[in-house]
Image (cartoon, rainbow, N blue to C red):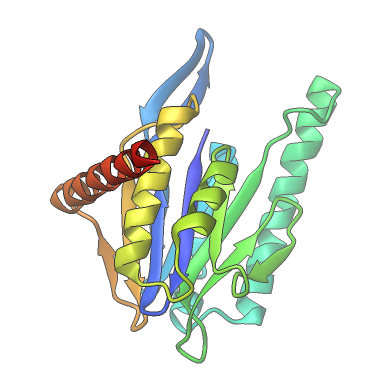
Length: 230
């Protein structure tokens, strides 16, 4: 179970995720902390949801393109990445179906890259499990995982037309926290990263996250007071 998200802002991109993963063992499933946001090269951030093994293999492929990604997200590089990931994804699905005799529960993969393109414009590129890909420009935000529906709802409801990193990280933190409190399998710790329009990447510290927690707590209290007054 996962929630990962990225929001395009006028001053950069805000990126967030929960911090737990489930691993199958002979005795059942166990949960462990896992980092779901990763830096690829110096100018690109990777997030993904789906089967851990497929995510790991995708990351290995992307690391091989670090130098190309540092030059900017371009169609040729992204198409090459797609062509390398697709056979791995297809093989995993075919093997699963051959072994289990059904399509239900087949391995999944949904990835996004946040980075500067060749024109130094900060963009979010998304590739779904069927290898359909696109730049998230019209919608302005990307969400994936079992918590994507409530997260989309939260972002659509509370993000203004003119978005800033400061507002987006606050809304994102509250959305992930409420998703954690609502859905089983999505759990702390929360990770928040930002990338500014110049490519500068920041990873929120425990102190930064504590501040977001405090802001969101006050925000919820204001919502409750407003609801009670009506």
